[in-house]
Length: 525
Figure 1 (cartoon, rainbow, N blue to C red):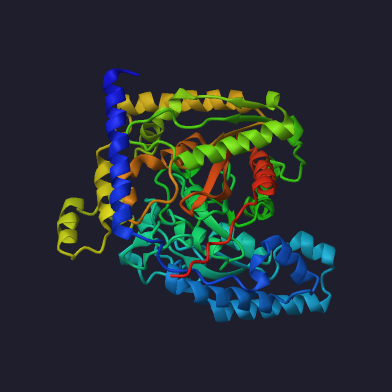
Figure 2 (cartoon, helix red, strand yellow):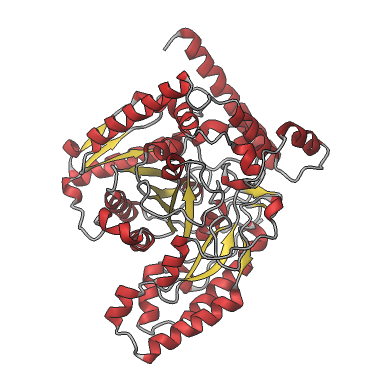
């Protein structure tokens, strides 16, 4: 690294520390206390609840009532739920209980054909649920409701899950704090002064607060994995094109963007991810071989500690570096040092540039068109002027993201072609490295959950997750306990195409080793 680069990195690091200091002065203490979790039903995995419901040890109605009460208890503090269908869901639950009591299906048939019968599920306000809001956080869509279920929701319904509520997102799902002019801002259960991530931030939050059994998110730049990380839960971005994106808004502009986008499962418990993915993948589930056992003793564990020092990307927090080293120590102790290898992929240093370039397409449309509800480009500069006097219905970050998007390289340009080749070379390198028996353990994000609005001053940090989208690999966010700031720690586990089961198996192993989800701290103000 040149002296100029070293000096620039030092100045940037000092600036980031100063920014964090200022935000700590602004926000002070940890904010509002979270109500204690007193109902044992809320501490069960979705898989466990499903088993107890079909065995008639619990009724579906009782389970739904428990989660409805918890939402009503925490939502005034967190603002994670933005729409609900409580009455209709309770009717669905009563029907599920009646079906089980009827004896029409044996226990084995229910487990196979309706594995989540009677379990409430939530999803984000950009994945269509028939009759519920479908705004994607865009003001002009504030009254739009889903005409039909998204494909993934329809498959989960068919498996017996009962849609209960919708959760908050960032404006048109293209930023990593969940805040918009339709529903407002969502707050973190571990510290209400911190973000929940985006765009599946409301979903990550409702899970972490034990107000939902499980849920669906979507991810085109880390929108499942960042919220899962910030909220201390599990979240999986599937291999490209495995789960249908039909019913997600905004829709991708091109076939390649559609491959970058992935709908996936989110839960406090790792054991829920595999059966959820098997359902959501539908006919394509067979390509994932999810029922094949994974022998971790034969797996190769690669790990990379950082992106190598990318420009304008924060350095990895000491807490997160220590957490990753604890994972490495555990893997070395359990599986042997020959199976664990530290690597450094230099191309990760260009993750943001590669993501921005590969998101370009030949449609001529960009983020300003999404802000125009896929109907027209908004005038971002005029809207920004209106925002300054409180007259715009868009968020500041939505407008500045549109401006930043318009400044990126153009589709087909020499820079675009160069960065596409970089993407392809990196993808080939990782495919060779991982083959069909390797995983890469990598930070999900360089910092723990920032304060509200702080991401505006750290906009490129999403690159740690975004690079995986344009590569098309599956990746699972795994919680690793609570750090020195009282906030969740974690890593992401990446595997080769259609080797999702390896990510999920490692997630289950790390949950056993480090405890998985931790209850949000109970504070007395």
